[in-house]
Image (tube, rainbow, N blue to C red; front, side, top):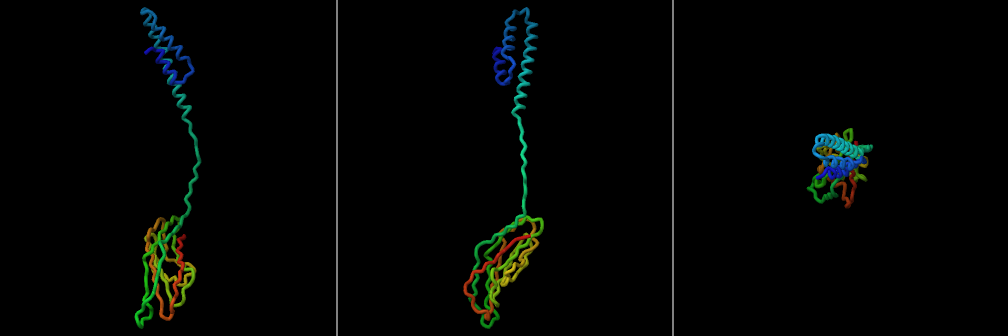
Length: 207
């Protein structure tokens, strides 16, 4: 390949505005001189080649620097306190039996439901329970929540707990998943009957 062809390629990739083709033509002309001048011409040619290559390298670096741009962006981050709790489906409790002469009817229990919670507060949390309206005298509803993240308050009577009472305390940061809820339902004969009624028990997780 001739020098002119080589420098045409170098000129295309370097993007330089210097007359590379002119230098290349001079080098080719030098090579056509007679052999008696070859020694001096080789030195001249090498000098021109060195200059040309240096220009190509410098131009390439300049182009790379021109394309290497940066931009700064501000990113604001925040994690707020989160207290979330959920419960599994509805619960049904039915009393329909008694031991003759016993003080109370045969109580029933249900531990088929569960709750899950997440707490990331800086202070320990707790779970409270309340009922929307009080039960008649002699009819009792109790609740127990198992907890691995906090401390269960064991069996708590929520028959008249229209104001929330603690059922789990000392909850640390983390999660409790599918923890068992147990309901105990009892009644005395003196309380009489209770027609089927839906009560709302509310569990709340808070700091």
